[in-house]
Length: 264
Image (cartoon, rainbow, N blue to C red; front, top):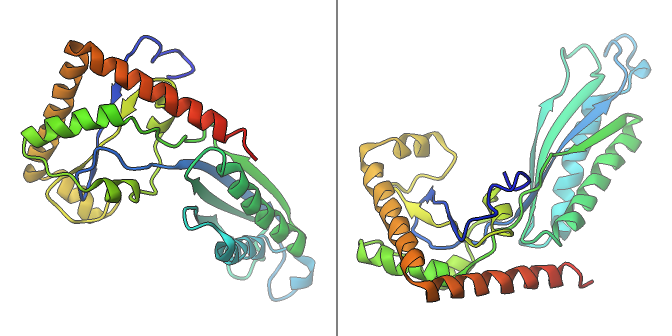
């Protein structure tokens, strides 16, 4: 949508995400995903194991390499993945394995640093096992969400009128290690991505949370959040001075990110 120019004539954008708390802003981080494929050589695991090149061994080594790397990772970095494919039968040395990994860092400047370290782990596993490796990144990275204090303060003011209780600003700035393509949008137009409580303390992306999100109780909180966003949109429309502050915040944040990306 960004590449197609869908946001060119917009002043602000809104999106809300369900959570265990109410927050006008959480620092969603930059994210890069990769698919890693190892190619080895199949052989009978009992009769001729020396004839094989074990692609599953490469996947396991890569997984362990990344686990060891965590000792030297910054506290704000995240690496997590799965072994998607690891063989067909126990008596056949796997000729193919596949992993999927996500890398997350607070900014687009840090993300390539983490990604290189992780990719070195993948290549080392290939070297150690004699496999060949193919590393393919996702089509689009997720950018970190740029905060817009003027916009989120307007949202908080409207939310409080509706009875929404927000977490403290300190808790806001220390929360979330999630990622969203909404971050990319906030680099081209001012935006707000609040989180809202749905009446359940279940953790996101679990079966319990899925059930809670579809409950009748959750609809009240969802509609209340939608009302707060709508009220904020009206403020933007009818208060030109607010829109000017929002645009100025946006301009400064974009410039700040561009500056940080040029500093070694």
